[in-house]
Length: 82
Image 1: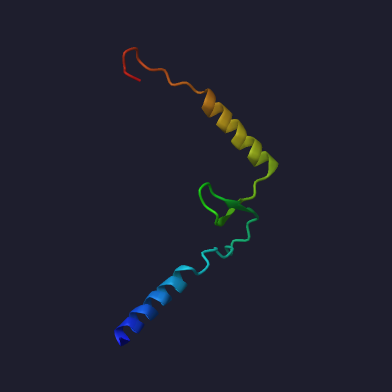
Image 2: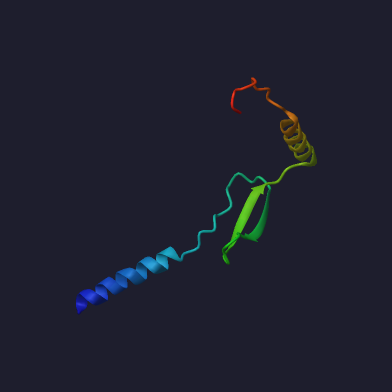
C-alpha cells in the first residue's frame, strides 16, 4: 500500500512539473521585440510569439527580397523531369 502512495506522489510531482510555465524570460540583450499571444490551429492553449522589432527600412528590404525571390525563375533543361 505504501508503494501505491509513493508511485502516486511521484506521478503527481511529474504532472505538476510538466504543467509549469514554459514562458521564456526576456533576454538580456535589450533588443526591442514585438510580442503577441496567438492560439495555434487545433489547440486552445495560447502561445506567446516574440520576434525582433524591425525598422521600416528593414521591413521594406525584406519585402523587396521576397518579391525578387518570387520572380527568380531557374531555367531547366528540356526533358530534365522537373
